[in-house]
View 1 (tube, rainbow, N blue to C red):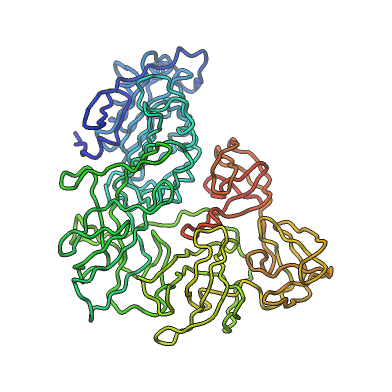
View 2: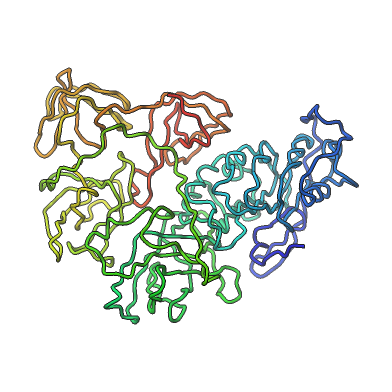
Length: 632
């Protein structure tokens, strides 16, 4: 029999005899009763009542048999004529290798859902969960969910649980604490919105009025992805968190082990605020660090490693208790992770601010993180991007002119950059970070002047003019390297342009863009006959004699392919905002929807890369191809 680790007792909260520990007091929560006897149910004609259910894993057969009270092999009659307490499928004592047979529970009497706690071998398909009815608790423990069939989970039907004693939670957890290299990422959570929304919208929640969300042992770094689900208790310990950027450069020739190096946290709480719950450092001289707000000041670094590794190890007796973070609406967050911050043992290059890759994956310059639990072994990171599909940018790439931007003109960042206090870039003098953004969300800066670094590299002295962002109004220095920053306005004529601004653009009779206007919607292709300078900006002159802006964030040179419709692959939610908050509709699988436009999420948050959304009648839907098929 498999031994359940101490931390797993927090995850495996079943409906039968659930053990809860609150404030040091341990209580047992009894199972809830099933709903009243149903009046109708769905029965497959493929099987008679006396036919046995086929299971490939004996442990699953035993768990289902116990749940429905079967006296021998489970038959379809045992399921169809089930009466009594809510069935509790408890299969956590061994790694289930196949879910075949679980689909038979779709034939339970109408109104009865199962509470399920199941431990799956990595790679076992989740497709069998299609259309399963769940009530009270859904707990799945499995490594590698990032590559799993998440769409099937969104078809689960979550039923109300009116029992006064039911313990209610949605738990999608990994098996390997701090080492689930294929765990769920930040981008995966919005894809689970249909399932999570059902749990969040249940009338009957736990005794404190919150729904328990457990996402332990994954790869999550930004817990604000759960913010839209109202009052929740989020348990998210054991995360595997790799931060490839920024890289901290240390010159080995001048390294002093008594120097404290600053590592700002890159973990975000439910409200997007920076949080740091780590209490320990692996492989430095003392195993400790000084906490300055949410920054870690670390001394005595190991010169043989390319990572600083911070951790806490939740529920480990060698570590202090981890208090929950409590929010104004009553939500709580308990989170920790093994955090990897990249080091490079060489002198800091002048353009280090632009030499990084995106957080959580990619081909960063640092080597793959080692596993502190097995220091002699190097583990390969399999973290990959799971971002939504992108709208193609056509054939017109941003062109490098080789000429610096004019004072007073506007530039935008086409790759990740930082804003620095001085022209000689140093990590400790970073004022703001701007991750790489989709074209329409790129951060803009007014060039106020120029300066050169200690070795003569040109910098722009700028003001941040992203008026709705938290960085608006900041002043400092950014790179003038045109691989990273370019003029916002086109500097050359193009035969055609496509309107890409979600709000469209206006065309005017004069280049000052004043007076009566004609409006062109997003996706409109316009013929261009000239480019005209207007002060420090440019305008495209159209074939009809009117003028439109030549702002690269609003129009794109060339012809842009714009999707016209989509077909849902599974149940799909519609939301009021492009951040997929405030759900206001739901579509069944196979629904055909007209695409009215497209945009990207988080247009004013330059710490979060925007994700593509489609605008449909009444709101926005995901553009992720796992859930939709685009029709051109």
